[in-house]
Image 1 (cartoon, chains in turn yellow, orange):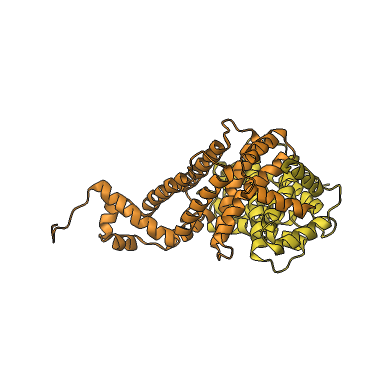
Image 2 (tube, chains in turn blue, brown):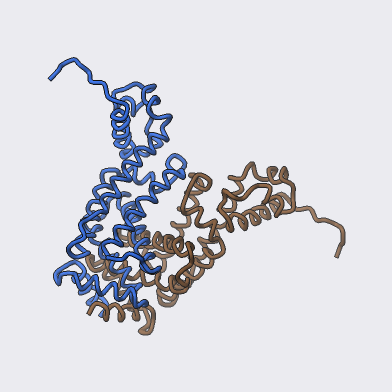
Length: 229
Length: 229
């Protein structure tokens, strides 16, 4: 323990610290509303020193978004064992944890706009979508997806995004309900496609065969059956 | 019939003509790639004259987008009679006609980016989403939607958008199939929500009661029933 000795950070360590501080601020308010002065103050350094590491707010925002994107993409990684419904539910929980932690920044980014929309930020958002897509295909055990499966998986990922955005706007529905709902939505969208396409039908039957009789999918099928009759 | 007399257009008429010419060009290629010179040439006037009516490309783009937004919003208007499935299918057909006509411009806009993303363009996109939302609620006969219904309708609208964008990327699935699929997706998403919520259950039963026994929803329910068993 040394007292009164202020440790000097190396360049990369300081950059990483600034990215962490900026991500925290950009998560809690729209990036429009966060100033370099505030970031400097939160990091305990001077404004010119911030500019020494990052040429401007946009480059710091992009670095923070890159870190958040990598974090989010990792949340879709899940051991490939056990029923699909349970795996997807764990992924949805981690996704909503992320959305909960980064609410205002997530909304500002996904709703777009001049401060947050650039070709680089769009590329980062797309990289997360692509990572999620690859993970879902891996869980389905499919390497070369037919067009209808690609459509279902990609459009479900967009449904996950929009559901999270609507949830953030007032949080009027418990997130646990939405996590389970999105897992069931995945099966429902697959089933609609499977109703008209044999390849999708075979995939759906394979997925459902591995589901436990007391699992969420069986429960949904029973409830839908009683609604339909 | 007068020959050799070139009729002069009034200011508003000329503006409307320019908007039409620009919309055609912005629909067929990404707005990034369309120049004022090209618009001037397609309209048969000089470049300085274009600037006389519109201060720059962005303002002309926004005017074209406004016209396209109004056109698109109108396509969601549909007489409130007959089964819901048939109404929604007609709306989906008109929506895909629009997407077909404006493909590259629609993709560029919805995928965002510096040339097309501004707070005004975002507001126009949101106004179309809102118009679609209001129309769907009117077809459901609901004035003051509970949170779960709002979520299902808004997230379905986002599913419609993402399905159209994925379709445009290669057109590997016939659009007629996707139009019918999206109508069934609406019922499927409602059903997933209804499986856990009595209010949504009552709404779903009311909708299904009005559907014909040989209609698309009954067909879907039968196919899902056989898949589930």
